[in-house]
Amino acid sequence: GQQLNQSPQSMFIQEGEDVSMNCTSSSIFNTWLWYKQDPGEGPVLLIALYKAGELTSNGRLTAQFGITRKDSFLNISASIPSDVGIYFCAGHQLSSGSARQLTFGSGTQLTVLP
Amino acid sequence: DGGITQSPKYLFRKEGQNVTLSCEQNLNHDAMYWYRQDPGQGLRLIYYSQIVNDFQKGDIAEGYSVSREKKESFPLTVTSAQKNPTAFYLCASSLFARSNQPQHFGDGTRLSIL
Image (cartoon, rainbow over all chains, first blue to last red; front, side, top):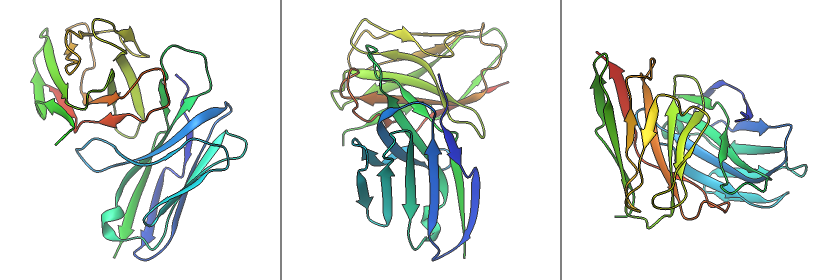
């Protein structure tokens, strides 16, 4: 399956700073999902987006479904040490397939420095 | 608590041996999935199942087999034909396969070669 282009691959930031990461594709998606994965654990769903232009918040996290339906952004405000982990974007492509398979980005490794 | 339980947490395989990874969910989800995660990469789909007694190959099914005899269970067997089985294996489920419902993940099984 097609991989999403997720960037940056890794980020080192100071505690209290804001963070931005994004995913892009050459194909149209009708769902965008953002997950966080801690070491040795499974990904946990942070935010789900279902409409182009949609902006959704979950605490200090805000994600947007791009107008072109080919990209999505995740912002974390005022980062704290527990934000450390790998953030994945994922999406369902617009298709008539019988099962809606998810396509995943390769992840953004976030490190928060005290 | 509702969720997805994967066992064991760690598994070791000898040459020529088949091993089976367990995945159980009590979320009453119809669809279940198996992914493989290698370091620094996104998730790749091995197999998925939309309903009981039905399953489909994903992108990297060779060397793996599954069964879906019960709605809540979707075990994955890593066969001796899989020459590079060392990876982190994640099981997921979603309410319906033919929808944009998000997938929810278990905590994974780490498989290593002895």
